[in-house]
Image 1: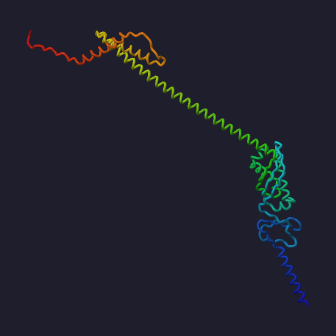
Image 2 (image 1 turned 90 degrees about the vertical axis):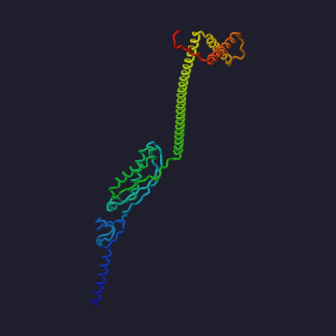
Length: 322
């Protein structure tokens, strides 16, 4: 009888011992941390892996996820600095850094983070104009991250990112913005068109200026050549006059008749070639003209005869005396 009671006692002890071992061994999965409470008071934090606690005295308090988590910030109406009402929503990423602070520093972690984000979202965006909200999302995200992260550090939480997902102005405001954008584009188009016309006018003016310069250069060159031609013609006329004067001085009157007849004929040609003269009626001294022409013929005959006349033979001087 005693042996049976002893065997039963040993079995009970073994069972109780196995139960204590099972209760004292705690396995924590990766990405989680557990807090240990001894008689209701926080004692320590269990890291991922196999951990030993004191059975019956210690127990697991909070099981916390220490991986980075995402929290949606619901849509809310925000009034901007210029009194424009917009609907804004976002998303927030956070991570638990201190399991003890999260477990015993704040009652409801998710609600606390969400309310902190929504409150600071209204504060930051309410201090900006509508144009700033629509064009400076990076600045809004940076300010929200700084404010929310600083506020949640006392809870052992690290806010890693805050992103604004959507900013929705009212419909009438969107229509006004569309009209404003269209007016701005029309303005830019008008400015570009005016700039094109201005450049075209400048190019035309430059071309006209260059053409006038080239025309002036041409006229200058033509005037120079005309002056040079007149100078040569004057020299030729002076030379002809000199030769005629020398011929007259030598007693050749026919040269004077030739000179007068040439001028007479040139004057008649100029009168006949005038475009506003159709019929010429003027007294002409036919005998004078015929005489002048005859003088030309006589001059030509004498010149031809003098060129054909042989040179006179030189007289021979006798070698003896008289």
